[in-house]
Picture 1: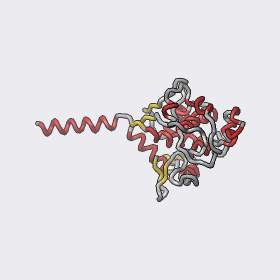
Picture 2: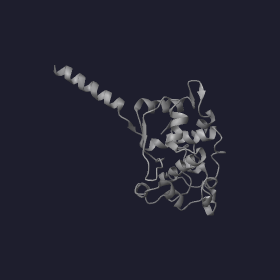
Picture 3: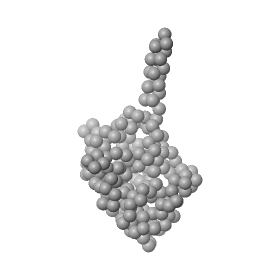
Picture 4: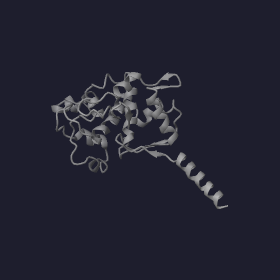
Length: 225
């Protein structure tokens, strides 16, 4: 009887684990990578070397005018990053405005510094380029073709999805997103995102060879988030 009870308890735990959403934490950034790749595939952005001032004209000044989408993706924007930005970000009602107001303290493209504040600005770029909130854009263009319907995404007080963290999804659906990367953007015979995007994603950053575009790279060029 005890063995039967124990087996049923184990079954219940395993079922709970399969039906409980995973908190992706910083792996959320790797899902944001898909949004940028899809924008590029659909020609909604010119390239990842496009300057941020194309989306936020107020940045066409000083060193801010030199910051590109690539710099946000590979943590080389030079954006203020000390003290630890999470202590500054979470109390903010608008993560995007907070990023826009940040100083550029190093010449863009010259220094690597893992930067949550800079990554959050990507949510604003996706919204401007696609005319959809980032989570809704991903749901339409990527999640729905993969059969992913049940997910959550934390928002700031202004309704911006967190790009640095905050994505929650079922384990089986998280695995589908991983498989999409393995298959270089192809799903059931359809190329959802250009194959070239995944090669670009896995290209080491000269300033930090273990970092690609919101993905980490090991010495055998294997991606991990």
